[in-house]
Image (cartoon, rainbow, N blue to C red):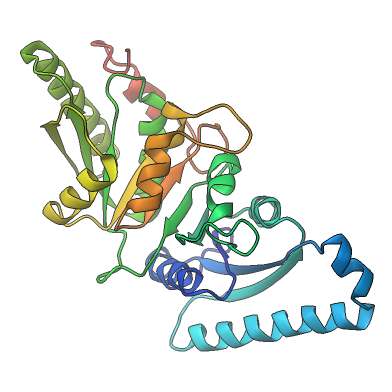
Length: 304
């Protein structure tokens, strides 16, 4: 067991949260990591504070702990990785991000719901807050894939923007998860020169991944106005992908809570688990000397 490697699963006993836990177990078994399962007791409303007694609060906390331990007992059967319960109190998204930092987690796993209930939806409305504010990769999914794995990741790249940071972080994630990568880019105008330029960039990026021992191929397709989630869902079947990796940096709306529309649309509608990378330098994506050398490219493939 690698003692300094762990996942954090945000859990609220909904089916989507259980799917996230089951998927974290699949990935965790592959790379031999511990898993912490976090349940957050949400802050009490002013009215609730007035009527709840200390004894009732302790009962609620004890009930949550007992239920979490039951889940761990059930999920630990025939597992060779360790599961730990964590219970916190406060705003859900704040506690998830804070706990991941406290534990030094490598990734956060969350269920994704379609509910618009801003109060009750633990893993739905909080998802975007966490993706926006987490310094580590966040994996979101609605249901357990039919053949869950992380062996093959589909990585869409916007080659009209700088991709150096995304590629560096993707290299680290691919090495951590021991995954193959398929690069995907979309040509949105009919231009032979642009097609040649994009193909050259993709080949160069492919070579960089392979220089780090990561199996990589690429696909350049033409589509004037792609709906990204539909496109990725279709191509994930064609390429037998297990996960989609995106980076929110390229389209961040620099407000406190919201990420760009393309990233959010992919997260909300992907049939596959979506691993979201954040723009911060912290987390598992560290620029090593070897990476810096590989990314100094004479044809400036990462320039606009």
